Image 1: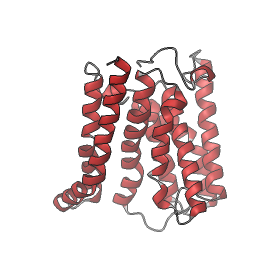
Image 2: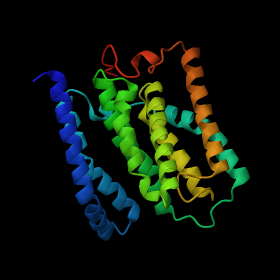
Image 3: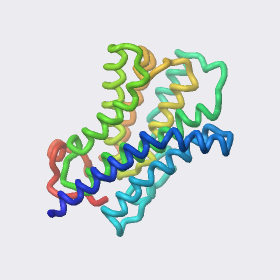
Image 4: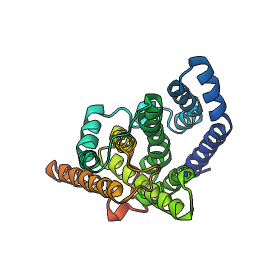
Length: 263
């Protein structure tokens, strides 16, 4: 069996194990943990930590000599990731402060689950594992690596739709959002914290202001989000050129790379 076939076989089996473990046991673990801790937030984090075990095992089988924090890109500077994400999302924050009212009441456990916890674990699962592992350790290019993970990321958000129009809007927004988060993750020197804080802050602003009940949003909600996306893109490109750093994603490696990244 060739090295590449073995890699993809283990990767697929590992993710399949995670997928079914999550599908069948996440809710049960969450309920059990909530009964013990009397906290929705603790239960949410606990369920994620336990159901992530198959992914951790998969990574260690594939790359036993690499540190797990390195494999998940969590060993990068946290403050640097936060600074880029916060600066880039300022247009979104300012715009929402101008055009929307703050929500009347904030339930902090729900806010934690819908913002920080979801952002942290979704970035680990979708960007670091599903997309990042394939891109970093195989010769598949950016779009080839990101396609399945982004499709799945979009699919798990479809529950928010109320009709076919909203379903299509949510699918398109979350699919493209996944590609954008992946691009930022790769171009910020594989710093997953950038994507985590970007995801967290965008969710946070959406939650604390009366923007919309789902990610399809409205004109101003999406306008300021788009302005922030442009701002982050400009900041990343400017920083790369200023420091004379090569771009990770180019036209030449959208589908196939000449070598593995191993970063």
